Length: 354
Image 1 (cartoon, one colour):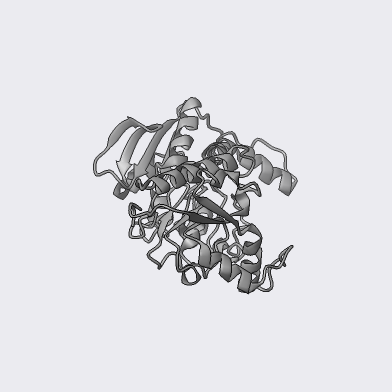
Image 2 (image 1 turned 120 degrees about the vertical axis):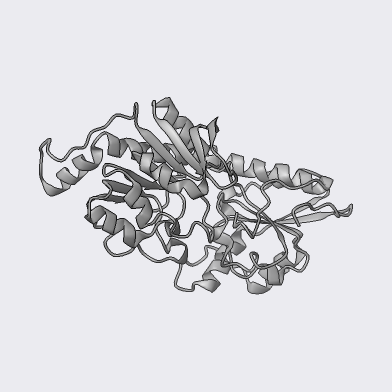
């Protein structure tokens, strides 16, 4: 359903279940035909019904009222976490927009298996903030701050153990040259780094495009890994990218190489990562994500304690003051397209997984 062109004149009811975009819903009222329904409070009740042991909602919205809201919606704006039962209760729903860049959050929802058109905010949400995190992680390793933090923890103070390198002349590898990957590459180049990357949509190498000196097809990942002083995972989680950062990737990386993951934890074989660190195949890892976090599972045993892993709780996007504004703008622009019967932007291809 990538193009919603059969839209009939009249009112279009938009249900907003995305507290992350704020309580002011004026960004939805782009046209007099739009009827806006506030479902932000209903999300907490939905999630509490699914996980009774989780946080109790500040305001409990009865199930009957939530069903009524969903039953009226032709368009839905949904944030994260995504309630699991939506499509089956929303008979009029034609289009659902997800406020996140990645859509793996939708896999457990019946929206994914429905015929409702899905769009995302890929390439727009917090790209600069996430890219800054990736570059900060690179500098943390290149300039020896990882060793400094280990020595402070262990009560040591010596120059031994440092593996100092400069950003100038080093190589940043980027797995997945999308919106975030491009920004990572652009910032890395300002530091004098050479940037090599992979991209799923190409079949042959490309030079000097989108913040990268060299872009290779995705099936040449090992070549990128072999050149990377820092390898940053920026790709979407799909069947093809599940645990793609595996033993062969770590074997290809230089011994001083560092892995940075700001995508999804499931894209890294964490057992292989721990083995690679223990056998000095790579020097370290900075991970903003870990496998199982979407299901609420804690990090794998050994990940938090490992002296050469820095693990943060999926916060690389935080601090971006422009993020909500960009998210609202992406949806508003798409809603105007919907009303005009024009093709929507960022339509999710369920076969590709993003």
